[in-house]
Length: 537
Image (cartoon, rainbow, N blue to C red):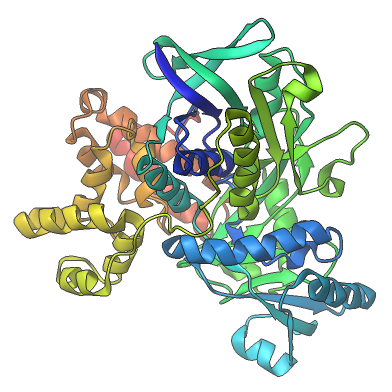
C-alpha cells in the first residue's frame, strides 16, 4: 500500500500550488488527478494574469490579491508570462459614472491605472472601435496555464513531491471519525489500489462537491461555464478590457500569435459540461465587435469552454453575482471529520496565495513550522541566453525561444544534444508552434505521457492556426515510435482522438474560411484514413 502524509485530490492550478508549497516545506505530499493535469478550469480560460482592475469596484479584497500575485507570478514564472500589459477602454455606450468608481477603486487597491489620451490609445491599439472615449493602461499580462502547471510539478519534484495522473478517487476511507486513506482506480488500466494518508486535501474545483459527498459531507460548489473564442492572429497588442461592470465577452487576451475573447457565465449542473454552441459564439461576437468593429473579418480557430468552481455558501449569489474569492473548509471544525480539508473558488491568478493559505493550515495540523517560500523561489531555472544562442542553428525560426520556455534547462539540453547527434531529430512536426521531433519525443517518452493529447498539452503540437490539420499524422506516427505499445498497435485510433479534441472546438465556429478549412481536413482524414469525425471524450 502506498503512503503519503498528505494526498491532494485535483490537478488544477490550486492543487499543484499546494503540492509545491507543502513539498517545499518538507511534507511528504502526493497529488492525484483523474485525467491529465489541468484539464478543467485552469486550462479552459482566457489565460489572463489579472492586474485586479476587473475587481476594483466590486471586490477590493480580490483586486488587492490579484495585483500582489501578478507581481509574484511574473517573478517566479517568467517563462510562463507574456508581459503584454493591459488596456481598459470605455465606449460611449458605457456608464461614465462607473469609470470614476473604477479609477478610485484601482487607487485604493494599489493598481497602477494610467490615464492615456485617445491618440495614444489608437496608436498602440489601432484596431479599436472609434466609439472608445477613454482608456487606461494597467499591468495585466497573459499567462500559459499548461506551462505553469508542469513547471510547478518540476519545482515540487525537487523537494520530493509526487503526482499520479489518470488516477481517479473512488472512495474515502474513514475510521472513527478520521480520514485514514483513499481508494483510487487507474483510469487507463482499471487497477485499484489503496493510499494511506494523514490528511486529505480536496482541491477538485468544480468537482469538489462530489468529492466531499464521498465522505458524507456537503460543500457548496456551483459549476459556472464560461465559453471563449480563439482567433488566428493577434487582434490586440495588449489585454483589452471593457471599462464597465463585468459582463460577457468583454476581455481580449493576446497569446503568442492568437487572441482569446471571453468569456460567458452560465450556471450548469455538472462541471463535465464543456460543450459550446453556435448561439454562444454569436453572442460573444456581437459583444466583442463593439470593442473591435472588424472582429468578424478574423478567422476563428475554435470555441472552447471551462467551468469555474464558484463557492456557494448558504444564501450566496450565483453567476456573475457570486464572489470570485476562495474559501477553505476545515471539516474537523465544521463537520466533525478529522483529516480532511477542502479549498474551493478563487481564480488562476491567485492560485499560489490559495495554496499558501491551505499549506499554512495543514502544516499547523502537522506541527510543521516551516515558512512558505513559494513567492521567492522560481519555478524552474531559465535557459541562459548563451545556451539559446548556441542552439539557434538547430531550430526553425523563432523555435529556439519557444522550445526553451516550454522545456526548461535540463530538457532543453537533452533536446539540443539529440538534434546535434541526429539531424533527423530537427524535423518540424508542427509548423504552427515550431515543435521539432526531438522536443516531441523528449516529452512523449516521459512516464506521464500516456496518450497523444498529453504531449499536445505540453508541447502545443496541433494547437496552432491549422488546428492539427497537417501535424496530426506526423504526431501520431512519432508517438507510436516512442515505446507506447497501445499507440503502436493502433496509431490511427490515437490520431482520431487527437483530431476529435480539435474538432470539438471547431464545430461551433464552422463558417466562412473555417468551414472551408474544415472541409479540407475532413477530406484528408476521412477519405484517406476513414476517420469519420464522430465526437468522443
